[in-house]
Length: 124
Image 1 (cartoon, rainbow, N blue to C red):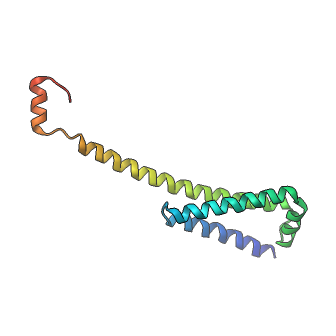
Image 2 (cartoon, helix red, strand yellow; image 1 turned 30 degrees about the vertical axis):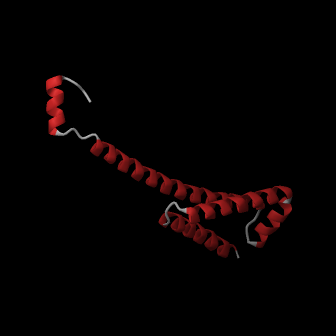
């Protein structure tokens, strides 16, 4: 039974990583993240109030203790967080590059402006 849980966890990590890496930052992904956060908060609160049920669930899945199950869930959550942070950073980096290019193009000095500045000694 434990091998099935291990396979399911590995597939969950791979599936979530692929899903979050391929999609853009849009309303659908934001909704999915919010739903997952809500589910995580509810499960966390439930496990605090009823820790013996978490241990029973872990044993049912072939995991020794409830704390081990929580650790596995945190590992999956951390990997999802890393994937979303990487995607968000990549998007911000692209935006900053586009802005820098736009500013560079907007601030180009034409030869006429350059000659005028040279004769008057004036900077923009």
